[in-house]
Length: 456
Picture 1 (tube, helix red, strand yellow):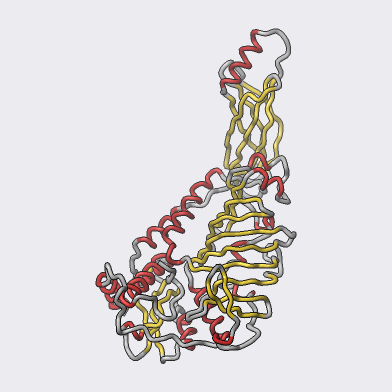
Picture 2 (cartoon, rainbow, N blue to C red):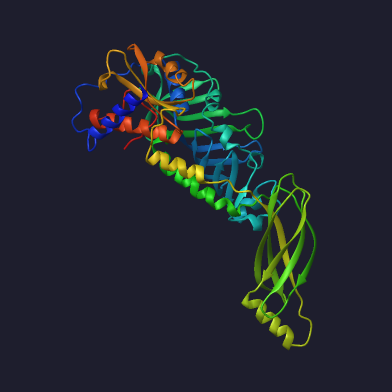
């Protein structure tokens, strides 16, 4: 059955290559039913949870009272990339392997609570591993589409969409649905879809105990190839990322091999953390009261409690000039170095993200895979008029996801598996091909399609 479904998928895509949709098919689609507000919210939540990736743009108040704005795209697996600001100070954000990384300027780190002023100049403009409690916001947990809808609350009135108040969000007509936790804004027509949520509060424990969440929402599933390329590129930059919250004890130091061409400082170090770490030493040198250069050095990995040393060598033209002057001009010629020693992260491997980017670009079916592409259709037939939506579900119990949606389809709908794949990027890409082919024939997406139906 799976192979037969895949054959249908590929033929459909090939037959519709170059379709423009200028002449809609007379065979579809059937109009989608209008639901009461509670069901429209429920269907929108199902679609949100089914998305491969979602964009969020808005603001919240962190537990410490900081105003945090975010423009982030978050995958179903929890990876995230984008930009944020804390009290107006910007940073680039990355979440990969369930770990938060930030890259920001000096002012950001100087103003962020929990970061010593002495650390800020070293980490400025570098990637930094940052515990969520430092930022006050756990991006992965807050925007987890499985748990986020639990914060939305229950609609206060069970009206039909025609009776619900209408307003505009960013120029888009929306339904304003009050809940006991805030306000949800849905598209005015089926399949509705969440456009924005305004909530008074979020989780119960730091760093999810945020409040005043106000975020616009849009599906990013169609852009998963570009998204995973971006995630992989940023992850590759983490080779030099700092981990300022893993302890490195500094011991004695000495200067050695100081001559006309260079001079070195040797710093004794001990890893006082619980995991093996590499350590970076960065030193700024002065001679005769002037800055004469800087050096960087790495050592390790050092095992927990292991001692070691790092040698940082200065070989700048300014050092050579200073040394020659000290040798030729009588008198005192003091020199020295100020340094920091900081743990480097063990960088994650970007290979898996690159593989997902390739899967999203050139999806390949795998009958033994655990990612299932399905179609929900009217049981009266399999042509365009009977197709209600396409989707992706995971695991051996994947049918539970589409089965939950049958109650929203009033035409006696059934679920068919179209194909299986080995990863979510490939599965969503196959589903997108189906949606695009349908849109090429009919001129619009299937009537209940939200995921993968972004405007062209």
